[in-house]
Image (cartoon, rainbow, N blue to C red; front, side, top):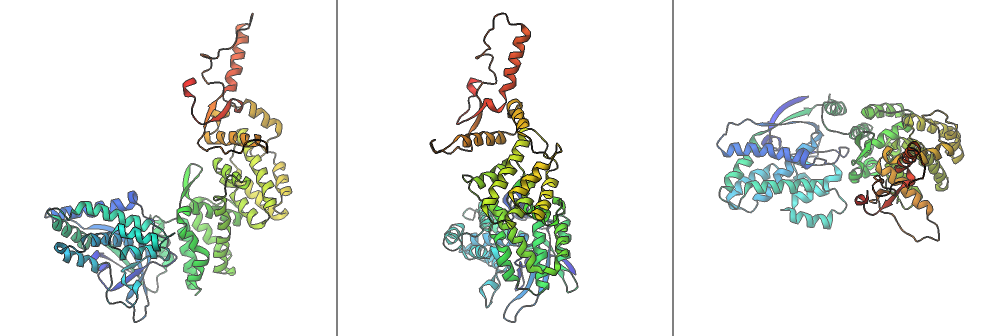
Length: 545
């Protein structure tokens, strides 16, 4: 392994292409977290050079790891990007924005040419070889559109015509750099050419990257994992993806086919899979939540979020005899079910169950649900199981019983169902056998007492109270009622106001003792926050409280 610091004109100065393998994650950098800090650092150097401070210190941009590749005689020298794709692509987008802003202006023609040499290779036989950096498969169409259009306006037109359904994060990055650089350069005003020269020199000469060139003795996967462990912001699922496709390459499998068949959808729908969802007190990307539930199902044990990659590597090792395609196919197959859990229409009973599950934040049931949907294809058998699980969870919620231990409970349900079958009868019997306070299914009497006496407006989160009230309304509808749909934004209101004494005092009772009156008042106060005194309205009644 060889590591050396280089300025940008050296990193991109050769007739060479740095490309991201298909198993790399897509472009994920964002404005506040990465684009803005990068631009502010470069702008600060440009302003120092503009002020005559030519000896200002270079700015260090971190390290990239490259692996030498063999290429055909008619193609330029190439390196595979093991780590650093996000940084290298961002620099290319920034320089492309500078190039497009300068293009066609005589006063900065030479500066435009200098930047162009850092973006494009010359005299190539294949169109894609023109680009100094070539991103992972899912981003290539949009990246090429950016590099071939002269402005954000023409880019949007091309995106509409040729890139429908493709990622737009790359386009947003380019538009951001085009806007902020244009605002700073002010090429139509006096001094624009001088500002442009300072900016181009800042990028070419004052930015440093440590390039780590691997040799044949280096293990790309080990380096990838080590860099991530020391702060590179990769998801556990990114590490799993890299691990699987590195192994596929070593096995000389058809990597393109495997990616297209089993992983491409994760990249195309990355707005869904990388969206953060709440898990307890924290938020996690949805794909990592899926990875956790998948592993919990497969291993039959709880899997900590902080150990996802190590746990998956252990799981893969125990199943290596099944081959790399089995690992990819199995992961993809369960992901189809998980994806569907979040796309069902909540007008449908099945969709209502999953919506309520999210409102209650009861993701611990997902390993069982993945097993259910993979094992049992008959929807008629799903619904009674879902209804029993919903009853179990809602009753415990209304009775204010702990949710601690649900992880273990539903993994035990997985084990029981694997042995007896995922049937309505076996699931119900398992839940009914639970007798501990932490796992029991509350009886009708326990549920009735909690329903009538517990101050659930104060005890439960508002969206959970709203969920129960919506369910009550739905239960009152029948064929004779008008068909309507309750908005999710309805407000919870008290039928008897919380401040009832000023407007609705207790009626006097002749000869009543002070103690008896206090008991009547206490009874009314006790009922204020129970479900029987709550309703859903389209607007607040705060003026009448």
